[in-house]
Amino acid sequence: MRLIDGGSLDELCVYNVFTLSGTRPSGRTTVHLATGRTTHGLLYIKHGAAHFRSDTGQTLTVCDGELLFLPKYKKYKMQYTAKETSFVLINFEMIVPGGEECTLADEFTVLLKDSAAGRIEHMMSLFESCGTLRGFTATLRKQELVYRLLGMIYENITAPSVNATLYPQILPGVRLLEQTYLENLPIVTFANACHISVSSFRNLFHKKLGMSPVQYRNVLRIKHAGMLLGEGCCTVSEAAYACGFENLGYFCRCYKKITGESPGSTKKSAQ
Image 1 (cartoon, rainbow, N blue to C red):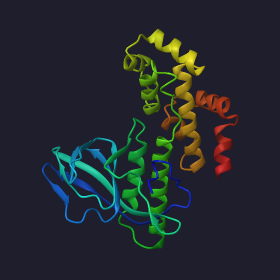
Image 2 (cartoon, one colour):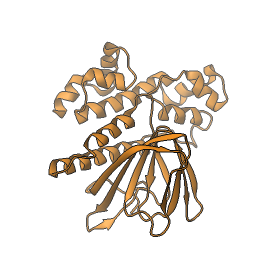
Image 3 (cartoon, helix red, strand yellow):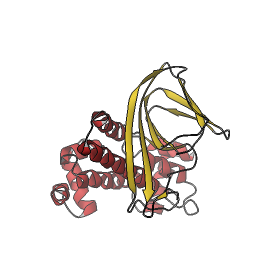
């Protein structure tokens, strides 16, 4: 079962979680050509680069801030290509009710790229902090972190996007905005992606979506903030900063306007 293609995270069972992290020099290789990987893997590149080549000929290079899925049973050779590459690797197993194995993808797939807010890097630091711990509590903690990471991946994959048949002229810019909404990129960046002027991009955007690019970015940021507050992993001010809001008062006004409640109420409900 492939979860990305329509499977569900409901009742998914994750187990045998093992974390490895460190720094490797250029030329260091890892080979899984005989029997393939024995578990699924999520490889996060902090700094550096790694090149993959499978037994079927697929090649892929993963760089700074990218999170790569490594399927179980995949046969491949990997080589670190930067002078030094820092990484975090999470190995784990997944099954659904009835014991059926499942996967996120059949090939190497970059699932996420970290933003300026460093959300994935923060998650990886949590994995590293409990990577060497032992005991039942540590096992549960590592499983919890995998579920949270899978939730981030699934949220990104299933995030609402503009229909290509309805908005072809501004689609590249809107997609770029949806991928970088935690960063403060100028509107000209999105207009350039569509090869049109800023004024044309703004006008078409408002005509098609009923709001400005900045308003749409705020909607995406508030949705992200609501998830962080719902998880109970940060304060209101931390959520505001993590989502690109430098002014706490402005964040609270936007949050209530979009969600109908204050960020404090969302956090209180989660607690």
